[in-house]
Image (tube, rainbow, N blue to C red; front, side):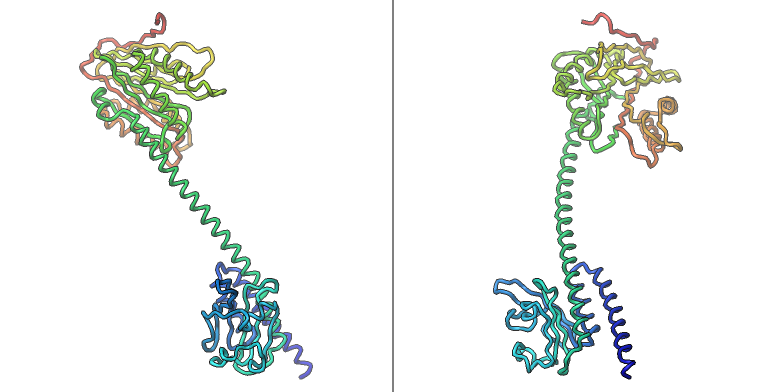
Length: 457
């Protein structure tokens, strides 16, 4: 028997060690004090064979230090929810003295407030502080008979409180991180809401800058317009003006996307308005020349000015004659079952080396002929089975394919073709396409275009 006892004690110790490891694993998942207390109070009873266990927290209240009996696991109620002055209870003594207290008989120890213990089953106890240095609390175990807890029971409770101390610190760190993350998330969400509000406002401003549908229908009766920004706002815009008996219309693509492109678009649109309304120009080439000067003047502070605008601009007179000029933006003409691409001047509205004047081309078109002004959002879009660009070849085929349709249906078919080509790929650029069909009243027998760059004032 004497030989077997150490073996039995060792077996019990190993069993308790295994259980302590399991408790550690449970505590590793704890993210708040409620879970910590639930695990610890249950483990304290199980590991020591006690009839009850309490989890006590040190409260720093306005009335001084209090021992808060925050949780318990016992055969009958103890003091859960109660708070006592730190100097009047054994848990307070344990925390203040940073030591484990073993009391075999509560009636034989002057530190015990007997009046609080008499209504309970408790006759003996062990109280261990959670961390020896500045304990935040304590864990108590209780028995219903007077007994001296074994050294193993005391050590296992002290090991549990040491683990609990580490867990509490980790929980507090985790909660602090969560608080900071929550604050940061709230700040980011607030900034995001503000940015979305600003972008929504910018979108409304940009929409107000564009010609309204009523004005478009009045001045260009047979047309369609596709305007699809890549982002909330766009570097593309279309522009419409009337001076005397002439209608001027343009589709433009400014450097950049989103807000930066939209800001540049607003400035360039304003310069076009000035050129027509203040300076009185109506010839497309002259409009672009003057607009380039004004844009360069506005952007002169940029040391490396790469900002600018590509634009396709036409003027239509009452007789139906169309005059056109382009800056890096070609004009497509569908007439007689063919697609003709009129090449634009290869300079932007902005800074360029060896700048030269923009030529004006006069187009005498037949009724039913259609001109297309557009940015490069469609031809540059990646898609299809191999993820390649749409390119001009497919654009020409598409324009011929829809030529027999009314303008509204042309718009729908072109958008369907764009979406089908793009598939699940992101839109790479802003896209604007405007088609204008020549009405019957502007009949012409000649279809030609000539450059008129020379001899202008």
